[in-house]
Length: 283
Image 1 (cartoon, helix red, strand yellow):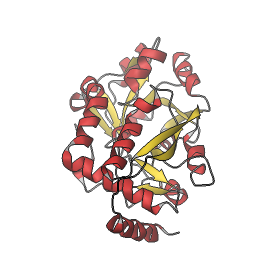
Image 2 (cartoon, helix red, strand yellow; image 1 turned 120 degrees about the vertical axis):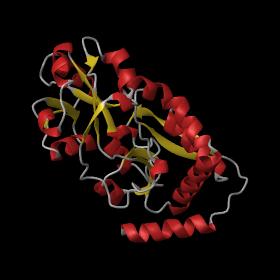
Image 3 (spheres, helix red, strand yellow; image 1 turned 135 degrees about the horizontal axis):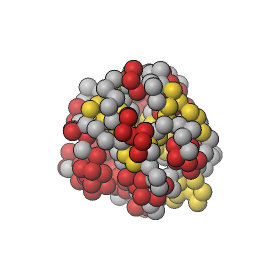
């Protein structure tokens, strides 16, 4: 199904969708992060609130095991294990599944701080351009969209198949730094950052959106999620939940005081709503 055809179906579904009081629908979601308990996570809470606002109450049913992002997309569909996945969008991912084009993290995963040893951090804090950043190596995960984004910008990327090993690689000098989103880095410093520090004065930025994705045939579910998110934005509940979960991390990051190294994101689909400033965080 073409992206244009999907968009037309989603628009039609949104118009005819009529919220109704009903028993909670079981909704299968992935356990995609080791951070916090899933039922308390921001994406899970936002999804539950959005569908409630759209008149489709749900009972979230997370998987018991962690599921990598790429595999989670493959598990979408009635005959598979998942109903909704949230992950960073790309042209390829929007071919695989149906995106609800509301960036639920307001682009926070495109704002990156750098974990490094103290010695490397002292040198990296002087970086003023992508060209100077290319003098340093950065570790990223296998099949992560960010890996391709950094490589497309000519960065020296060390690829690792193991999340836990990436922190060790930086400590051992096998990579100079580990770029992490402002939403992730402070939690990771506390748990995995022994011997590492957040590089001061600079940050990386590229446009990046994390969406909810559903199976291509689930146009009614996609329409309900979009309707609910629109209603939460209109009544302020979206921003309140965002601030509750991310306000402290953003305050600690002090992005407005940092030198921003802008990078391009060639994976970003042309339908990404970059022109809607109200959907994005800007320091």
